[in-house]
Figure 1 (spheres, one colour):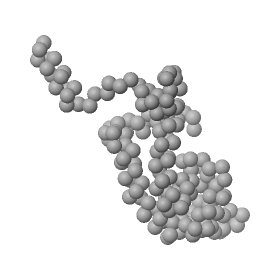
Figure 2 (cartoon, helix red, strand yellow; figure 1 turned 30 degrees about the vertical axis):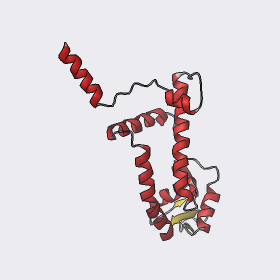
Figure 3 (spheres, helix red, strand yellow; figure 1 turned 180 degrees about the vertical axis):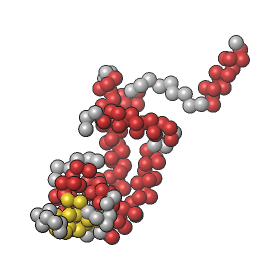
Figure 4 (cartoon, one colour; figure 1 turned 135 degrees about the vertical axis):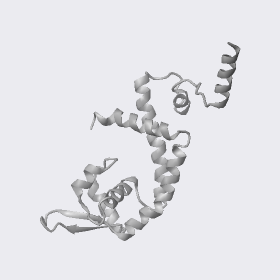
Length: 176
């Protein structure tokens, strides 16, 4: 009996044991005196986490004078380089939906990060391609984005990261 109790104490002392109440950090951050119902709390937690992470992400992008939507377009176009995509194809691949993808592409084109050509088969379709300058920008941003991603997930193990990713996909998978 004593040996079991001693083993439990050693386990607690050597392992991170989460003892705080669920919602404690959220309540403190939003200065709430009463916790919302659990399923509502999940939505609030997702929005708070998203806003904080997006804020950190935008700090990195601000240095390069691009928005998160513009980064998203560059990321999509890098994935099909040297080919490109029509505007509608870019729009459906956006991680964060942008209401005006045309203006986003216009701004990238003004910075010479993308270029537009007419489709050879259908001249009505404009195909946007990432330029060498756009590829270079993504390459320069990559170490900063990797560093931020590691910092954001520093309190999670690799297994917890996989579990979180799977749970998030489970959460929105039936909605798309």
